[in-house]
Image 1 (tube, rainbow over the protein chains, first blue to last red):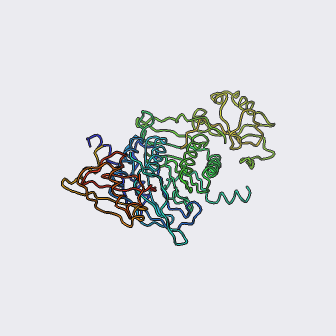
Image 2 (cartoon, one colour):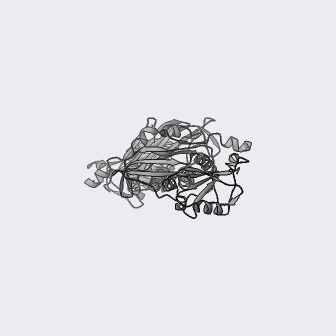
Image 3 (tube, rainbow over the protein chains, first blue to last red):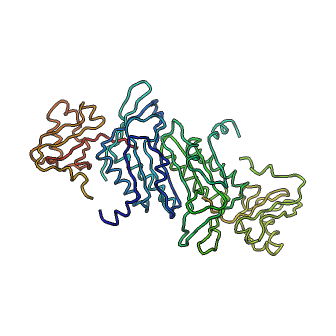
Length: 153
Length: 153
Length: 94
Length: 94
């Protein structure tokens, strides 16, 4: 990694975590005096999937790969954003309804870049991050969510 | 307003305020067990406008009109979002660099609607809300920001 | 949609509460004035009559954006005694 | 881009650390196994040899998504002794 890249990377934060995500903490990692727009996206465990009532969710990760992939996605997001104000955390393990599975915070001088970069990040997470999700249903059964074939960069 | 509309409006929150905006409080107004996506947009006072260094900002509103217009925008946003989880606050008065001028929180079962509705709200605020902005520059001068001709619904 | 300013209409009033915001307020050196009005006018007639008062009202644009009773109105709208008319410079919220 | 798993290559190793996640782990009833490997194979040869071991490995798809040394690889990639190979079912993060 060259000097310029190192400097650019200084504020970028990415983490796979088995502890609850604190949205406020993720949000507070972004923002700068030159930024006029801040955007925070939260993915939250829903009580339904298609028509089935869900009461719990379990995320499994290939952690040794998910960590560098998430970092890579954050760096790509920073390039699109035009700033290094990018923070992303993805939860793994067992989650209850209403818990945050993913938090993405970005900030930029103008809003268009924040919206575009935030959306890019969540779409790429769904395409490229080696994480799987098993739903537990209220009837006691559980099943892996179908998902999409994983893609490289 | 008919019953259905009243019910639909129950969680919608909109406010013009001269007190500092608490992003966490705005965020906590949205979310429901059926929502998988939450999005918080913050407009923040930047230290530059075009090439000029800004050190303060003053927002003036036609409050008696801005309040119902903001409410109307929130209701339109809820229709696009497909949920009533919409909260918006716009600050007026004197703001320092880094202070939040507008906060928009939305939540919905799927992320596409949240991104689309959040973006709709901020764009419509800029088109339709009777609010004006005067920049104070580091050289002591100040000027009204050019803005865009106001539009109706 | 219910006209949101409907409650503003005060029968028997013989004037129009007229408001100027931001750049227009600075331009005129005044934020509010009551303009006597005995009978309805078109918006264009009302603006024309106001500008015809001369300084400082002739500093207003000939075709400004205007809200009547807190709704942005189109050309050809009517201004009645008791209405609230606001001159709105280009907006810059957000 | 620096291959992120480059540090994993351990010269002299004569096997491939092979990982199965989520649905594949459930399908095989196992999450990890070391597969002996003396010389490089194409990815397709490696997968074919693994499936040829029979139960439970023949339950894997013929053309699965695979990461070698923590990078998703394309068909025709090489698997070498010392590599880490992971079978990745369709992902569902977010």
